[in-house]
Length: 437
Ligand SMILES: *[C@@H]1O[C@H](CO)[C@@H](O)[C@H](O)[C@H]1NC(C)=O
Ligand SMILES: *[C@@H]1O[C@H](CO)[C@@H](O)[C@H](O)[C@H]1NC(C)=O
Image 1 (cartoon, protein in one colour):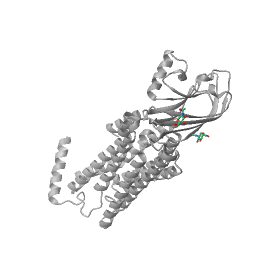
Image 2: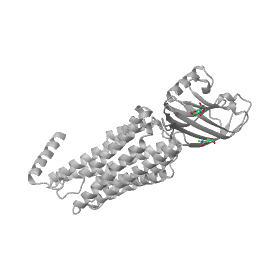
Image 3: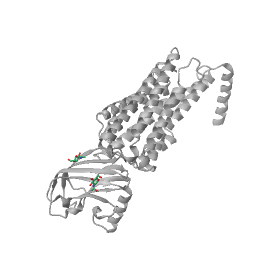
Image 4: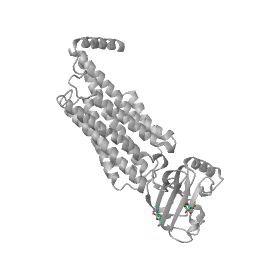
């Protein structure tokens, strides 16, 4: 691994800690004998017409002789939370619920001995809020309760509920449009395969499967998000989505490895070390997908969310680095072949192709992992969809590049070269060697 790969790894870990999420569904949490002073529940981007439904039942407090106005739920933006922490530190207030920067939703002094309450809170200041529970008697009080919460925005005129956070509400449409683009690409690829069927290799049929899985995956994600938008839950589409994400992830990484090794158009078999890469990447993808499911379903404040997020990022980074090795090996082999064997120029052209491919794979990985996370961090919650669009555009560009460069062709310029070109290329190789010295 060279220096740039290390830099790449480092920036991923750096960004890992700043990834703000916007979740949106109806959530259920059980709190049992909890003495944490602060329990965050969920995060949501409200418009001017936002609602929070909070139903809490089976409340039992270990000590009821305390001032219960210092126990309860509130909404707070991240910015004001930092100010509240400052106020607490400076001793201006004793309890987060006393700060005028938080929006108190329900304090337990209103319980009057009941063990449950339902409340509807209207939020009219558009911003991204966190729903938080504060217990300002952490040493003396343990709380047990079942919390059902739902946050949604009401659509201007029709008062229809929209359970997607303000910046994510157009995501179903975005995913649907991209899935149409991939279905079109799949159709184009089928016609290419049909026209060039005599020169198509097995890998070209595999590419068709990869495009198709990507299209179906996007369609499932569009359905998943659109059900959540309308009803607050995915109605089973999430399961289909996870299934196709899994197949798509495995097939894409396998494709990058196979193309990187030159399988089926440079050579008909895989070497042992290349097979080993696949044997590492595929199980890691399984782990990555399990982590993704846990992350998505539990929300940013769920149990072990951070652990699973770290597992996911680690596994993802390992997969991304692993798929680069076969390309590097191919480049090395081609370089050696270009020096020793008579067909220097042909090998040099292949070498150029593989170098381009290496750069594009790095760019794709870097963009979809680092740039996109950076974009999520710097854009306002209202524009969180832009990072999804950026990631999907980069992915689309990567698919199109791969398909275009490795398309089946009777006279592939990379593999059939006339004498004149061979001489020119040999000249270029000489120059390059001198330059390196
Ligand atoms: C919130 O808005 C709804 C509908 O406009 C209204 O019925 C309800 O009383 C409001 N609640 C509060 C706490 O203002
Ligand atoms: C809260 O309770 C009300 C009334 O029982 C119900 O209509 C609503 O769906 C509940 N909301 C949640 C999030 O459980």
